[in-house]
Image (cartoon, rainbow, N blue to C red; front, side, top):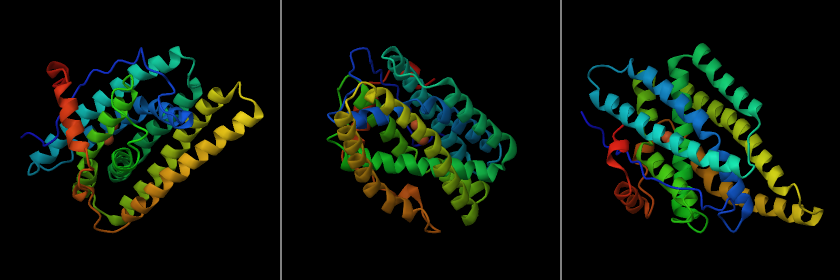
Length: 278
Ligand SMILES: [Fe+2]
Ligand SMILES: [Fe+2]
């Protein structure tokens, strides 16, 4: 059985990109730092979903097919982020090795010590975060994320358009395997806390690198711009977060944001068919 997800592999090239790809440099640095998390988190999501697949009842081949394409989409995401992260390193934006090691070790520990119900609830929580971020990109922040800006705007728009597309896979897997409301909320809250802890230290590190040669006045202006962006993001994000707490919340019902389906069409047209099917 085929899923409704489409696996795309558009080829973005970053060698001509400007790391400050947005007029607001702090926004650029925040999202550049987030890119360094993708090759750690997304393979882990795939490992959890692959483990969950073994627990799916034979009567749900649709869910198994969804997991298969979810894994393919996420694999393409982190492979493309790895390519961008090499470019970041070439420009001097390197994440300290122990940041990666600690993040990976904690995720490994979760795999060893937590139940499949908790692990799938963690994944569902994370996928809600990416759904809301997709809505932020397409509904609120089109002034920030533009196609054709050396590949970086396209990288995020493609990635988060597909996050919208597979928004309900982990949620449905969790509902099939466990479904308990309290475990879902626990996994959700835990995933937000855990991921924020690791992502925020990366953002702080990149902003420190960016601000290294600034005068006190420039630094103050930079901090103010960043705070203004964070307020904008939270204003969009927090009301959406609260709706996840409703017992019958279903991310599958979220309508596509304006322009999202057109973007998916463009990225399908840009894809290399052989790699997309891999
Ligand atoms: Fe992804
Ligand atoms: Fe995802």
